[in-house]
Length: 89
Image (cartoon, rainbow, N blue to C red; front, side, top):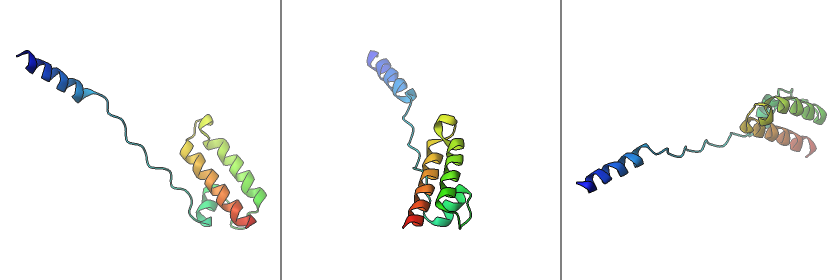
């Protein structure tokens, strides 16, 4: 009879143990120039300096140290990198 009680206790402990949460999928990074321009809210003819200014302004709002999220910061950084790479060849 004691083994049945022990089995019940083991099952209850197992049943109510916290389970690890599934990891969220990584953020979707911009794939093309139009999407990157939309993220940074820039016109198509924006030069490198305008891209840097828009990036600075947006990162100040979405950075994790300021209450934003790391995923949004990654997207903004990826948009900047994509646009600057395309502008500089």
